[in-house]
Image (cartoon, rainbow, N blue to C red; front, side, top):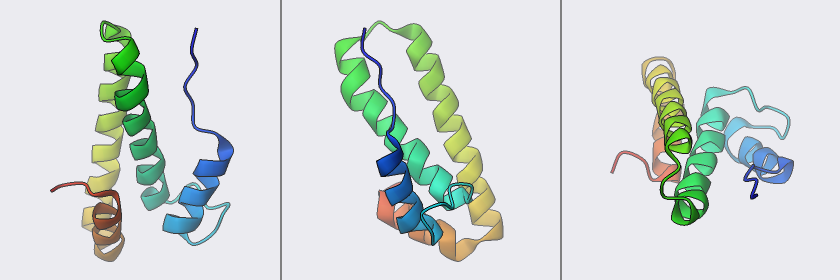
Length: 93
């Protein structure tokens, strides 16, 4: 059984890159970055090996929805942070 998770080191590096400090994981921009890492890892690693995992697909859709809500919040409240996150992560091409 394979277990895919994000170790704390990439989380803290994402927090430092997007949120201003290594411990600031609650910022919406940092959360978007962490969720995007999880989505990319699921798409590239997990679903290549387990294409029929329907429960995993539901979890992936939940992550995508959460990221969409956070991006919507950033777009409404913090335009500069939204533009920075979208450009760095390559979203909304």
